[in-house]
Image 1 (cartoon, one colour):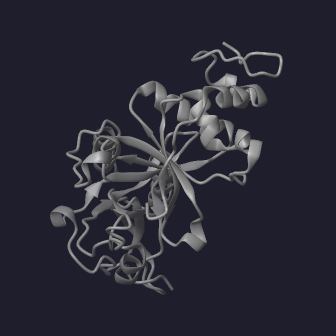
Image 2 (cartoon, one colour):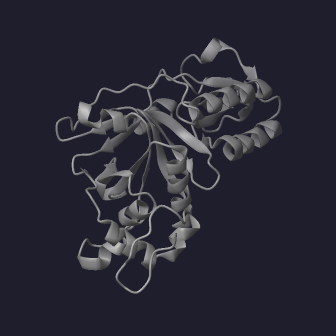
Length: 288
């Protein structure tokens, strides 16, 4: 038996009045095919909010903000409330809406604003990528295998916040958040994630974020974010919480050290060959 929508909303921190579309699918067979298309093309997630024992009708509730969808039951309002327009729309109409929504979010055409301290405001109000990756202990030359050092070896100007986490630290562990200012920096970060076989990341644009498939570029779960800091540790009840209580900005890294990183990891040259030439001190130079 599926959970009630109220319970799912509570578990996922989604407001009960977060609006859904009701999509008319004509037949249950078309509904199942439509669901597969929504998963594949738009990264939507199917949840079970159905009433047990009551057969499905040929319709779905879909929310673009949370990226969730669930089947309707015959004669039962699983949503327990109104939906957008209080009128079902066709599958084709929903696809048009989803395309408009995706184009607007991908191009950052929404008005994203966040109150933050002046020192970090210009960096935070932009694009960044938050991802989880194994890192070595920071002892001696083990730093040459550190993803933070590898990313700086690709672009020494990248701003990187270390020791970031989302939600419960015991479940997620620590992540790094890489801030980008140009399309070239974003390309470098995305190619690095694929090189290191990191399948998903949290893509952040100002105070909104979504889970992104790094290989396909598809996104899901678009929602607001809330930064938790030592001064403001309280989590938000909705969207994503990014914890900076233990975070720190990556400091200066000597170009000589970055040269050692490029020499030890020649696979990085698949991403970028230029940038800088440094005598590493071990008989050869980094590729130029």
